[in-house]
Amino acid sequence: MRSNLLALALLAMGCGKLNDLSLASGSLVTVKGHVDLLNAKIKANGHPMLGGIIWAALPSSHPVCFEVKNDPMLQKVCPDPFGFFPGVVDVAVPIDPAGDGTFSIDLQHLPSASAVVGTDVDHVAYATLAVFADDGDGKISFGPRMGSGGDKGQQSASAGGDAILAASFVSLLEPQQRLSFREGNFAGLNLFYPAPGCGTPPDGFSVLDTDAYTTADPNCTASGLGTIIDVKMLSTSDADGFTCRAGRFPSRTAQPDALEPPKGPSSPYCVPGTDILLLTGQEHCPQMEVFALHGCRDDPQCEKPEWDERANPPGWWPCGH
Image 1: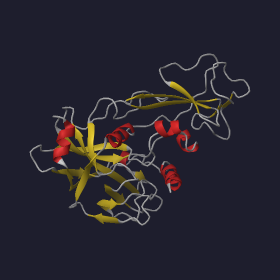
Image 2: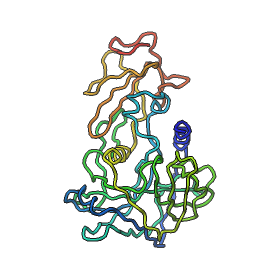
Image 3: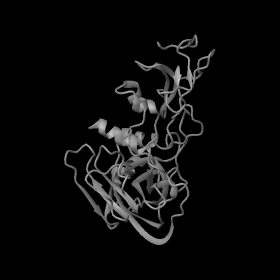
Image 4: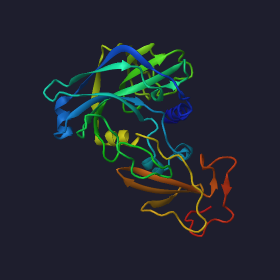
């Protein structure tokens, strides 16, 4: 089942993004959520809390994370392909610390073009309703990912920014409630965060309530926005995974320098059965840089490599070949 899920995740990464589409609308919808206020206040540790809508991004990872199976190091440093990858931060509202944990978010626009997957006519978007401990600026903010992993300027919610406390949709492997938006034909879009048992989501906004994808006979219900979405408290590991999946994960492979090994505090790791070297580390979020004796920038195991140094590897190269 997990191998089938992985194939779906890979296919989802190939879904097209809209290049340019204005989605402004004068219509107003209200999204409602509820969080366990007592536990949320404890985790917020005195910080004000915000409830917000986070639209999902396409899963982002390095090809080696999919191509090399069952490697313990890759399982540790690669993002979970079945997790929710945070993308566009939409409207956020303060949560009343003296209330009952229920909050409402008014939307006066459709999802932005960067949150929608598909074509100009046929597209879908999914969001999680989440609660954050605010750092004081009154808006949900993500801090910079620590370590570029070969791709400069990546962003993540790992260091600094607001801490996530609860979310309605954090993983395909867990029961979830997600905010859905669809227009046009759904054909070919069902691999983008597949919702088991749901079929085609209703046109426009709706709430999908579904079982984990691995459930043998999953149940799914689609309802209108009058539904109060259950925003569940997250474990530390789920919260860390959510924030570390924000932004784009390093996806490039580097050709090793002929004379000098790469510098930095990371630990070298030779991927068994390959000519791939990883430099891994941990600072807020897992870090990974990928080097290969032969390969391409977009894929270390491409069929027509852009470089091949197997016959004469650098003297410092630590891996067998």
